[in-house]
Image (cartoon, rainbow, N blue to C red):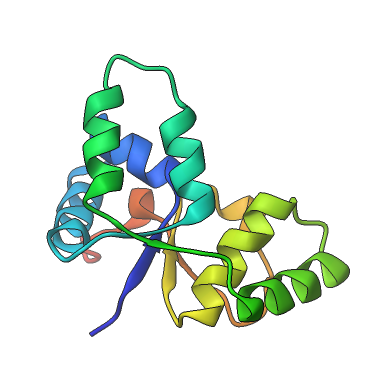
Length: 131
């Protein structure tokens, strides 16, 4: 079964109900498993000052948080040397690659052309492609 690393923008849009129905259903399924986030996403989410801080905190507490391992560092350095990617995004991408996870993000432009990175945008999921 495919597993996913959830980026902070996908969490934000999910918790705010801002995704299309198919994206919400998809993320419901992902989150009903234990959600997986990077330590960078944990930091970003917990840094927000919003009315839904408790909801965000509960989400983080219910998630598996992946830390920066030596393998993640190695992949991150390679990404940074080869691409113009900000360090936090390179760490998130490297975390997904090192753990063989598909990254869920609607910020695809920050992750374009990173070798071995699988990305899915919850805003572009369509369960009825023939429509």
